[in-house]
Amino acid sequence: MSNSSSISHFLLLPLADMWQLQLLHFCLFLGISMAALLGNGLIISAVACGHHLHTPMFFFLLNLALTDLGCICTTVPKAMHNSLWDTRTISYAGCAAQLLTFAFFISAEYSLLTVMCYDRYVSICKPLHYGTLLGSRACAHMAATAWASGFLTALLHTANAFSLPLCKGNALGQFFCEIPQIIKLSCSHSYLRKFGASVFTTSLALGCFIFIIFSYVQIFRAVLRIPSEQGRHKALSTCLPHLAVVSLFISTGSFAFLKPPSISSPSLDLSLSVLYSVVPPALNPLIYSLRNQELKCGLRKLIILCFQKCLSLSFLHQGL
Image (cartoon, rainbow, N blue to C red):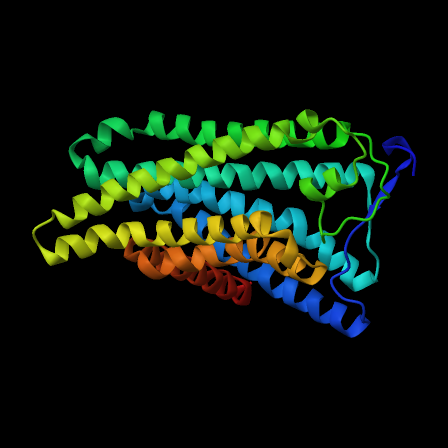
């Protein structure tokens, strides 16, 4: 193909060559997506309905759950459709939309994880200023900034990737539209144009990473100064879920993009892409709900309330 104007669709990487394996992947993705939808949906509902969860930490957790739902809903449905119908095509416009949406949610998630780290830092290192530094208006501004930065980053990358002339075919080495895969199809020799957006985003991501590391160093120093063992345990219990989510997010994403080219292969790239794009959104609700007693209490109340409403509707229906 001579240029990008002649490309009407892209070919995604099939999850498997055999129909039986494709059906197995469909069932696996269905299970993961249902778990992610259920877990994140319960967290959103519990935080929205539980007045005792209307705190900065759970407000940011609600936003994180929204980004997880967005990531899952952007990539998995198309992969399930391709596996079930034994196809691998995606339209040019559909690929651009998928790339923009996924980059938006994944960038917003990283920004939100950074904001949540600041929340934990203020809570443990500056508890007397918590209400001042993290009031309702400040939390709303920080969440809005995280979403806005995610959108601007996604827009920058999408515009940069699809403005490059594409002349190396239309086959992508990934099961969804991803920025590096689009750039690989480019025949442009303008390295500044190709990698300028990547340098900007890498610098931003590195700045967030350094902030997270610095914050946790201060947090652990403050925790070690707490005299009682119970106090130290309580302080750490509020940080461990966030630290686990950040570690899962950064480790899978970093290894997927920074692995040596010598060990790269289609099967390994596919496995790593599933690890950083599909697995974290499904595991994050489990990680947070296992360690947080307040959230577990809110989820329990929500389930009981739903059960009582279903029961009352059933009795009402029987009475009619």
